[in-house]
Length: 193
Image (cartoon, rainbow, N blue to C red):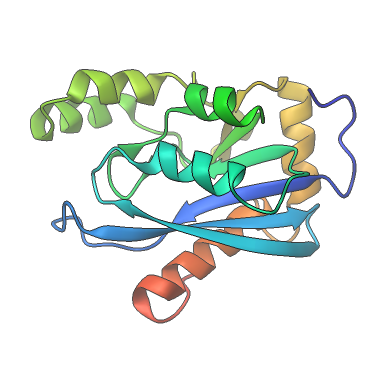
């Protein structure tokens, strides 16, 4: 439990690399950037995940629990769908790492459209829809521009963590850097967040 959010709070932010939607079963890099607040990069972890697979949850848990970074306080996720519809089980990540999770989203997700796509393309759509809904309803932080979901942390503390860990963008710096690194690995150069 976080009693006070310090300026140098240690966070890890995860994002995946660019991929082709028709490449189901191929691998995509998952990058976690460890930061102290919004200024100091402490380290980077990587794992490979399957497009439209079910392995992102295990990859995040492994990256956090087996890394040398033992003083992490919060896990930041750039959404809960990675590599297409490889959906994070946020409850399991929270339970197995003991760390609160803040899911940061730039656009409010269209859950109805996502459910329809899951029903159309996946035999296990019921389980994936359950995972999708497990993070709860997104909370609007910046009207029309930034939303978040908080697991294991209060709204007030989650919003404070987002503010403290953001610097030159709307999203926390660890997520911005994870996006840039992951896209560079997959395409040869970084893309803007």
